[in-house]
Image (cartoon, rainbow, N blue to C red; front, side, top):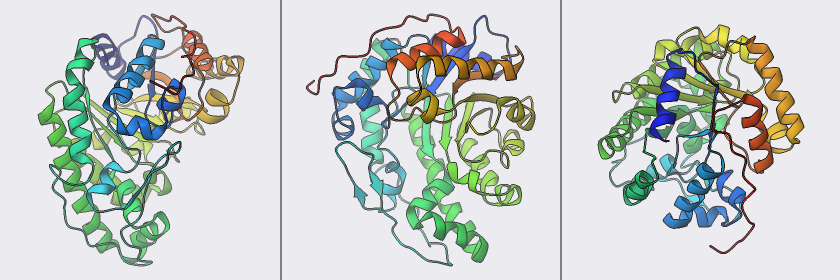
Length: 359
């Protein structure tokens, strides 16, 4: 993110009335490499140059929006599970997968906390940013966020989603012990990232499994651990992504210190605004797949107009986006239509990048 975008994001979170609405999208490997037409997903993970050039192409093509967290060093869902010993399965044109390290139908896993300085893919994730930091900063951007998958998300990758949800009910003591180890690991990982880059002033956690729980289980198994992780470092933006059901967690976000929430498209933004209260800004929430990826530019404009209508002209504490991260297949024309419909400043439509598999 540029300094201007960062300041605009802070203003939106703080409830300041912006001259023009802000656009922002979570952008990572499900969308970026295939959009660029210059690399496969595996190429994107394998090459620092391809990774940087692809991210740079996106920020240059869409100056009217901020990409969050911006120059995201990641390996799909595999980064954190790899530290606990998950076997990773890689594909040329599809996202990688982290296999569970154990499946128990009733009992949570007993874990040992990995060393974030040396375990799994974490050193490679951090080193990519360190190597590319001069190039990122020379283009007027900075590394703003420490990023991690959330504790429940990691737990489901380590033992299976169904198995973890069953363990919550049948082995609550073991589940808390498992989540405590994962949370301490995530505290270390967030602190390591923040220590490596003085420009980090935000924490971004992604945990869709929170959306699988009712309010009581959210309060018991999710929010205490999220609050602990967000408190690991001093930060101005505490950004949470959950594009599964968001109704159970929404009223509890502010108490956990969260001040920016990316939620699913199923929930009308005016309803979500009421649920989160006046201390949490919203990033959302037109349908990402069916409209932003599969629709026409006119469909996108209509969906943005409907979102604006629900907000009744009050765009404070709102960053216009889709209900989740950018999915595969979102075309340049649709993102341009979105930015244009929002009326974001510095809108300058560019043509889609040339489809060339060789870089």
